Length: 120
Image (tube, rainbow, N blue to C red; front, side, top):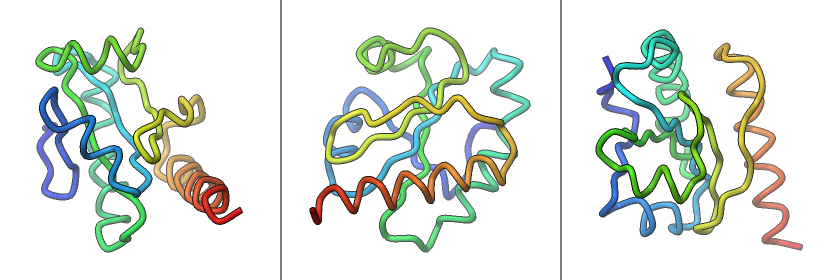
C-alpha cells in the first residue's frame, strides 16, 4: 500500500543528505496504521507518477514508526503530515485539500517560489 516505485522512501540514514540535494522535496510523514494515511496512499502514488520525470521535484515519504528521530525533528504531530523541504531546510507544512489537483498546485507553487529565491 505505501510502497510505490516513484515515491522515494526516506529514513534516519538518508533523510538529511537527500533533502539537501538541491531539489524540492514534498514529503508525507505517515504511520502504517493510520487510516487517513491509508486513504491518501493512492493519491500520493499518483502525485509521484506526475513528477517522476521532473528533475526539480521529489515526492517522498517517511514512515514515522521506523524513523522516529526524523519525525520528531520535523515536528510531526499528526498523520499524515505533508511538508516541503529545499536545500536541507523545512519550507512549509501543507494544510490544503488532499486531492491530486490541490497537491500538484502546491508543489508547482513551491517549486516556483523556492527556485526563484535561489536565483534572486
